[in-house]
Image (cartoon, rainbow, N blue to C red; front, side):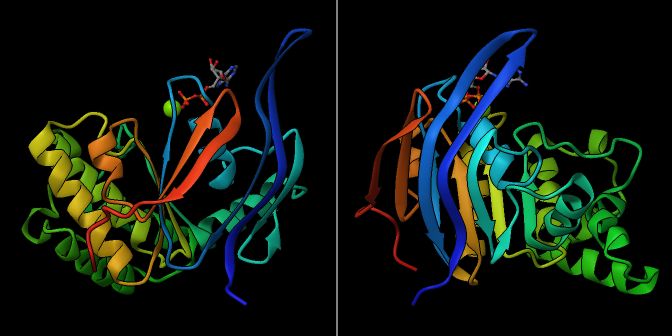
Amino acid sequence: MEKSVIHLEGIRKSYFLGKNELPVLKGVSLDIFKNEYVALMGPSGSGKSTLMNILGCLDTPTAGKYVLSGHDVSKMEDNDLATVRGKEIGFVFQQFNLMPRLTALENVAIPLIYAGINKKERTERAIMMLEKVGLGERYKHKPNELSGGQCQRVAIARALVNNPSLILADEPTGNLDSKTSVEIMDIFGAIHASGNTVVLVTHEEDIAEHAKRVIRLRDGVIESDRINQKAPAL
Ligand code: ADP
Ligand code: MG
């Protein structure tokens, strides 16, 4: 049998504002297998980021089951969740979320500090990752000395540096012009081609065309889940 990286069963998520419950995810069940490349689409407010935060172990569901690479994470306490997150997940955000006072190299090395890796190896691996995303010679620059596209490359390198089993990206091209977006999507294509599992949120149809499978969310449920015939061949 194929190996599920993500297994979701009846995932529900509500936000509570005082006594008011806002149900956002209303029963999402889904399997994503190793080496899949999935685009998650849907209108603004449909629950895409809420689902991504659960997938990334940044938040927990109100109800339902989430098994990530064999770990049942839906009932884990924060500490254990953070450990699984550090090992299994690389997360790329729309706003890059880089540390402004750290260089590109130091930003990329952050997950390796948590993984307990020594400084020499951290530096080597971070430089290797920056080279992989085409930023080899800019490793001493800080985020405010880099363009948006370069910042996103740093964020992608940081997401990949600890060899996670799952790469999640929530609107990674949302702050970028169209030419830079294509360059960033090419990097995600290469990440997938080298054997990674990728789930990426976008609301742009032409961005989603890069993915092999397109899942559409509407009002907190999966509206459709289809194979994308137009995805570029590897
Ligand atoms: P999308 O990413 O598809 O635009 P979100 O998952 O961000 O959708 O949001 C879904 C709904 O949940 C929206 O109505 C949003 O206002 C609400 N929401 C998101 N995060 C929170 C939060 N932390 N607290 C309360 N409501 C939230
Ligand atoms: Mg969102």
